[in-house]
Image (cartoon, rainbow over all chains, first blue to last red; front, top):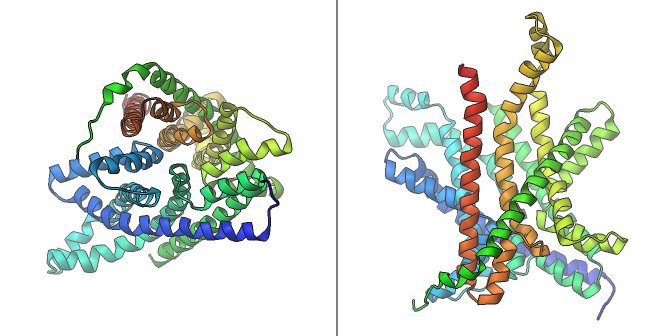
Length: 216
Length: 223
């Protein structure tokens, strides 16, 4: 039955937006852990590890996220692992995020001048001390702005999980649009909700970037 | 694991896959061309002294960059008919993708235009170059060189992003996966094969773009 768009519907969309945020945060944390591994494998002085990381990054960045979602959604049950849309979405997004975060962090680590390593050695610091007290503090500071910027990308990416049937903001708008037959208003509301989340994150990223540059 | 992978079940659909590849490439090239034109206007508008014009361009860019492509496509395809604009899936896909990529292309082009300083043009003229030579060698060539890598990666991102328009039923490559899935019930095989096809396409284009960069920018500047 077709009904009017009411305040309850907006609450419904906002509740669904919680899943958008939850999914983005899970992918950020799980993808971040895996991304650290990718970044390290990509820069250690051991060629096969580098090739493995490069292959992984190319595989993930060279295929559509939508394809990755469907592969996990249909593929894991074949290995006897029963997954719903939620698990498949979280897994695919985490793996996708790990390749991008890995590259962001590799770039941050490599943007600290190699002379800093030499300077640390000249001061008599050992490898671990140089890494944790000289290189990492600078690399982390450089990486904060692009990492927050990527989180915004991740929020937008979660919209694709609607297509495997996970009920987040976009899927909820599809459902609501079918019930009220007001697609323009409903998708417009969804767009506004995404805008509020993403614009805050991109502003935060810009702010952090200015602060890191000011500190240098 | 007792599942028998049957990729040969997909063999009868080679024609559909090839047609999907063709449509994806067509969609990508057409969108990129329109987006570059849109992007040029956006870049010029953003740099304009007219605050209304630059404000409108900035609003457009922010609105697009902070919302997902899928929602933008839904607004164009499902939303616009309610105000009397009815589009078929392919047209809606081209329009939705062009509006989306136009915003990103606008930012890339703006960076390219701003990378050329007026003093460089003056230097070119001081060396005795004609206005045409100055434009070609001092303005256009370095600007294109500066934005080429960003545009090339934007093209590959667009190629991957076209998969999203399968949700409108535009008949491109990813849509064919859903079609084959519905005919064969070989969901995993269909999506895995189509996803790998994208990998081949993106790796191919990256190699092609790298080759063109080397031929046009590296070799020429060495000579």
